[in-house]
Length: 264
Ligand SMILES: Cc1cc2nc3c(=O)[nH]c(=O)nc-3n(C[C@H](O)[C@H](O)[C@H](O)COP(=O)(O)OP(=O)(O)OC[C@H]3O[C@@H](n4cnc5c(N)ncnc54)[C@H](O)[C@@H]3O)c2cc1C
Image 1 (cartoon, rainbow, N blue to C red):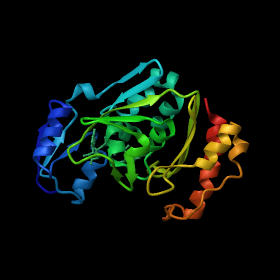
Image 2: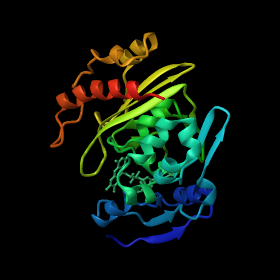
Image 3: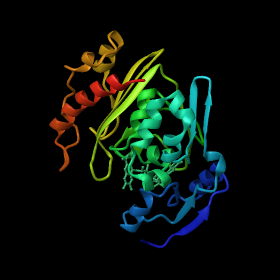
Image 4: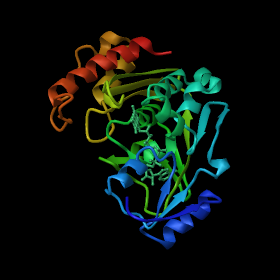
């Protein structure tokens, strides 16, 4: 680890101002990704700005047709929330599949989506549900938020404050997890809402993506059989010691079928 300064933010706005004043500073949320990165000397921030004392970044609100989750809300809090489980069971289910209890107790939704790991689960839920990301500067549709491998639409001095999810008619998430880390080798989030069907895939490619062909088929017939014969191309998919691109492409169809079958 390199030396760095440490400071506690009093508010999201103050943290954003501190980032603006020092381009080498970084915010820390759960630290589940950032701290190991520092330990391995893969990053050298001048200052860590800790968001953990900013209470108004934490919490879950369900109003009407929207579930809003503060950026510093942990995966465990979402997984155990009776309100989330009632409004969007798929979202509580997804949060409960992340990593292990230690990771879920520290990791936050804001940290997860800002990091945009290609194998992270939340990008699937945000794109699958058509969520909106609120930041210290603006609101960003999930479709525009996740840009590429570990890349988001966030500017250097912009902090995620909350995520709003519209409540769907039915949704579910299925993942084929890496047996060690639980990160998604492939995860598929399906949702049926008033304004249409969404199918979002995480883990398979460099960044979360939608499958329009499956969305059209499910719009006509909301059943596992509707997607059973739809294959995504393996061109450009991830390939590593855990799974080839071809195998990941196969898993997209399998996970999509299971997600539709489980939708509630
Ligand atoms: C062993 C292990 C297993 C895991 N398994 C899974 C898994 O199965 N599925 C999964 O999805 N994830 C998994 N994770 C990732 C984990 O769940 C966290 O979501 C992830 O580490 C990032 O969240 P964090 O709160 O720890 O962020 P941090 O590590 O604190 O920060 C990550 C990055 O986001 C930035 N950041 C943090 N908060 C904000 C904000 N509000 N606004 C702007 N930028 C911000 C930081 O500056 C940093 O660059 C795993 C992690 C570990 C260590």
